[in-house]
Amino acid sequence: MKKRIIIIGGGVAGLSTGIYAQLNGFDSTILEQGAQPGGLCTAWFRKGYRFDYSIQWLVGTRFGVFNDIYKETHILTDEVKVIDSKYHTLTHLQSGKDFLIYTDIEEWQDYLIANAPEDEKAIKKMCRHMNWCKKLQPFEMPPPLRTPIDYLKALFSSFWTLITILRFKNMSCNEYFNKLGFKNSWIQEGLIKNYKNDNFSVIAFLLMLSWYTQKNAGYPIGGSLGVAQRMEKRYNDLGGSIQYKHTVKEILTENGKAIGVELASGEKMMADYVVSAADGHSTLFNLLKGKYLTSKIKRAYKNWDRFSSIVQISIGVNDVLKTEYPIQVTLCQKEIGKTRITHSYRMINYCYDASFVPNGKTAIVIRFDSPYEIWEKMSKEEYAEEKKKIEQIGREIVEQHYPNSRDKIEVVDVATPLTTVRYTSNWKGAYQGFNPTRKNISQQLAQSIPGLDNFYMAGQWLFPGGGIPPSTQSGKWALQLICKKEKQKFISNDK
Ligand SMILES: Cc1cc2nc3c(=O)[nH]c(=O)nc-3n(C[C@H](O)[C@H](O)[C@H](O)COP(=O)(O)OP(=O)(O)OC[C@H]3O[C@@H](n4cnc5c(N)ncnc54)[C@H](O)[C@@H]3O)c2cc1C
Image (cartoon, rainbow, N blue to C red; front, side, top):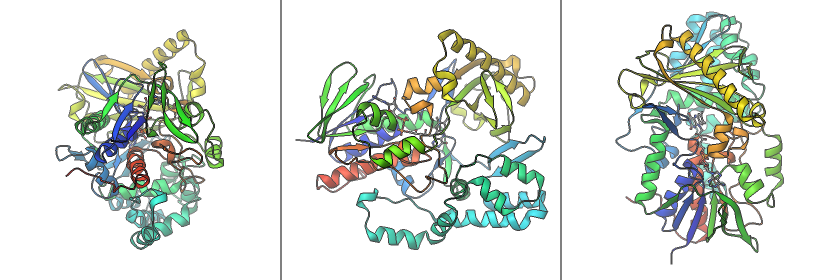
């Protein structure tokens, strides 16, 4: 008889776990509290507009270990067009000037030198470091299944990248840019002020540009919901069963083994294995009642920075608002309702993906960090009032960026940190788990927990930085670990 796996959570990590479970001959069920697949990797519809909530870039769209996973799980298929944009972001600086980050390192270098010739040496050094990061490839196997040969292979194939990582792994972006000693005030504002967060790791920044420049971090047309729906179809086609509106209340254990789950409805479902791809904090502290915390887990949840929670204002405009720079950041100090913006807000114009809107219209999204603490104790009335204020400011921001568009706005939707928590249960609305800082960039949390057999975790909370690539990979890793335990060969494809 087939062994049974219960997977908690139908985000990309849970869907990936389910796909590999089916490929390897298990009988799996995904239990998802919401009504659709994808978790954070989602979109919603308002008056014919689709508003996306996740993917701006996807590491691994062209080659490598993540790309293999995308093909195996149908995140990418031959029919999905991937676009590689010329620009990463356009930043409006407070001095009134603009600062571009190109996705191509050589082009960016030329642009920076042309505008700040006195910094040529420092610019070239920074771009050299990015080029050194190009060779990084993630491991195929989870840490417990790697052999010394895997580490040796990584050392040979990624030598310069690993040296660069070792050299800068304890450095923040801010320290790094200061150390390069830029003299030009425009570059200082564009880099030092823009990346002023004390802790954000420079390795994350260097790697990001190295992936972009190899055209290996594109955007799949159809966006986040397209990804989630293809994964759901792949899972269903392989015979998997996904149960929506099924909230897990507790992971059942007996004699140091996970044996099933209890749902909020009181129903119990038994299984040979349980994989939780739900939010890490609620898995460990609620579903497992804090009984299986290692010192590393305690340290991480106590000391590691989280991504902030965010507000997303989604705006549908009955006109084609064209821009060469779809992702724009505005550095500012500004009150938006009760949130004091101390750094910036971000605006995305989805004009590059026609699947978002009916012909002749534009979908725009504005995002800004907004601490969860502002929201958690709001009364219903305060909440409604706050959303109204934010909606109004959203309209004004669009008008500033696209003059004369105010009267063409057809729909404004405000999603808050409470929306994120309501739909995905992510801890305090942190939309990508732990922030990748100089303290944790080279660390990750284990998928299994000492003292609890037949239980694994998957998803963004295991890896500082989060994101779709490691989340989906952790689903594959969970099945590699289970197959090893079952002494069966792991299969990654049905072709
Ligand atoms: C605004 C934004 C922009 C982003 N941009 C990018 C990007 O450009 N590139 C990129 O790679 N990543 C990006 N990300 C991050 C990426 O979307 C996430 O890291 C990834 O989707 C996390 O997947 P997950 O499956 O680990 O977690 P989640 O998506 O949180 O899925 C967990 C699922 O578990 C369910 N669940 C929770 N508790 C229970 C329970 N008790 N019972 C049943 N079900 C439960 C939830 O409903 C949810 O569906 C972005 C995210 C956001 C929000």
